[in-house]
Image 1 (cartoon, rainbow, N blue to C red):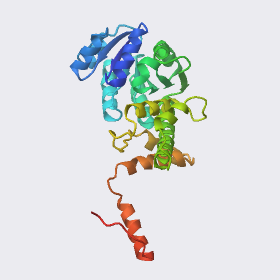
Image 2 (image 1 turned 45 degrees about the vertical axis):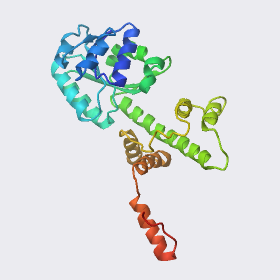
Image 3 (image 1 turned 120 degrees about the horizontal axis):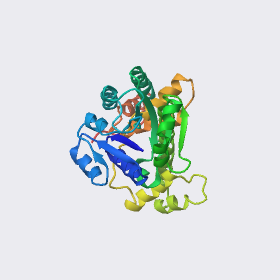
Image 4 (image 1 turned 60 degrees about the vertical axis):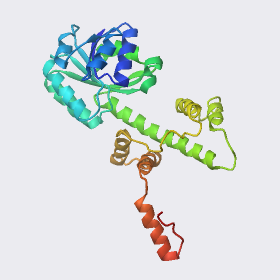
Length: 300
């Protein structure tokens, strides 16, 4: 099939390459002309603008996949594409869009006769080689029209049409919330091991846990690689960012009255990681000193 790809960051560029390796024809656009040139050198057709990209799409329907940052960049891209595409054409949003914002965009597209398909996409920088897990939401007919693309991007068994518009982004949001909890558990476990009286080789444990253990996973494979590169993680600061999906998952749990303590605490732990000094801890230390005379540590 032929499609357009907007956004050639680490995900978009690798997805484009995997699609071309699978026999698809891809027209690409990015605000960076260098990114376009690099992908065009691998066989893609470069475009200088969204209008240029749409003009170079000859298939019916025209399909444009966007992989740009969530929020305003995605909304602006969708709105510009709505004005360029015709009735029956398809926009696939493969970014980490908030599902409620995605539903609003779906309605804007629908009003203009354009279909918006939301594709929750997981795989990171390994997707080119291993494939991408795709959780796709949208109208049946349009998802079916895009299916050869999804089947090329995903490994065997890694793609499903999970429901109507919004379902793809919602399921990817929860996927990422689960990811928060899993990573937090691994992080805490390895910290306990490191602090114990035993001089564990953390790389060794990460390695053997990958075989036959009930906690084996791809994340554990990645932990092994991280310890292999930097045995005591001395080159990495313990500062953990979040891109929103964990917050949205916690909010969804609150909205549905679902207890989600592991995911919620994993999110809070990320906030703690960004503090050089916890003011709340200062207050607690001061209170313990006031009511019980407990010792405090003075600032240096």
